[in-house]
Image (cartoon, rainbow, N blue to C red; front, side, top):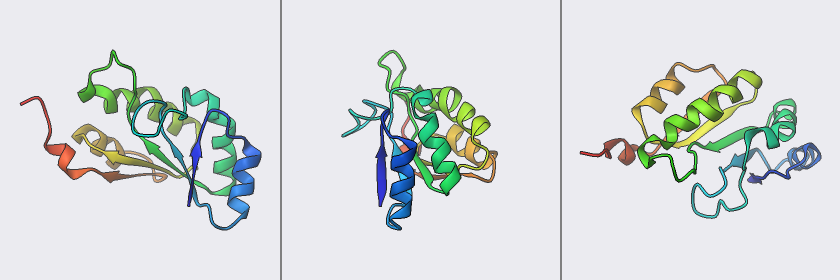
Length: 133
């Protein structure tokens, strides 16, 4: 099972969840980015303490990799997320196991291929076919 990571998820909740033996990961949805993400993360920095706890206990971070700001074109949301969230996340959490879920651009594939060992991804293959043409 996974936890739904929010701005209010505490390190204590992470540790308790891991201790159950049933929770293996937490899911990071940027608030408003996808279905049922209204209570998702509004700012990476707001979940740093929970992420530190995840890193300590060996819990996986599954991350929906797109920004949700209306001024960012839909075809640019993943690349902006990589710049604004993934790059500092990987810099600050060297051993946190991270899975970028549903990546859908060639740029994200290259980012993961060239990333550190603690980074993996799942691919939404049919999205790789979509572009403006």
